Amino acid sequence: MQDQLAELAWREGRIPVSTRFDDPYFSLQSGLEETRHVFLSGNGLPERLRPGFRIAELGFGTGLNLLATAAIVTEGPVFYTSFEAFPMAPDDMARALAAFPELDASELIAAWARGARQFSLGALEVDIIVGDARQTLPEWQGRADAWYLDGFSPAKNPELWSEALMAQVGAHTAAGGTFATYTAAGHVRRALSQAGFAVTRSPGYGRKRHMSRGVMA
Image (cartoon, rainbow, N blue to C red; front, side):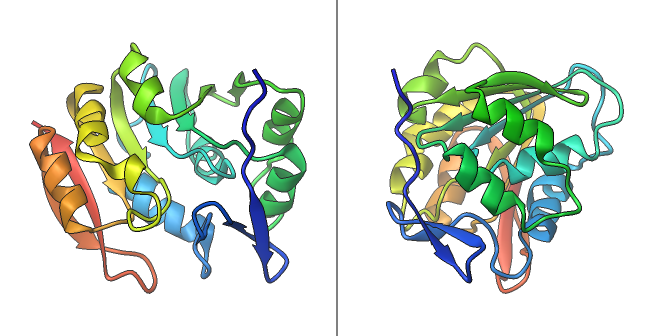
């Protein structure tokens, strides 16, 4: 079955915006620095990385988080699983990632263009699971050591932040596993707390005063 592709507009010619959710894919200030602050540092990476470590993500988007992760993984395999309902077209991904010349996106774009959704990227073993996470995450057999919760804004994409889906995130987290997300919305933090995480609010990146992170008890 053919993927249902992302529908995009472009801000300043280089920042992709989802027309479906009316939300940009990355920070208007610095998407890469936000990824490093929120998802990498927020999950204690790279310090926690080790062979066999498992990262899971809600919202693959442009693949920026994947590339930023690949840049810090020195010893593998590290397993990276991402859940994405509306994958980007290869040309759109290439155009978006051109905003980050410090990252080598060539292997990712080549894999994406040939339709691969399971591939190796440096020391990462990557699996992109296409479909509605409300259906695909409950079927996943894995348990993550770190979660990147990177769906569109809870106000624009509430389905990806529901109490039921956050419960599935908790159920698919290893003991001592973590999550990090750019949002500090109260209902999201409460849902993650109910899912078993000890949730804290931390300084956000740029104009965002706060973000959320947590550890599975």
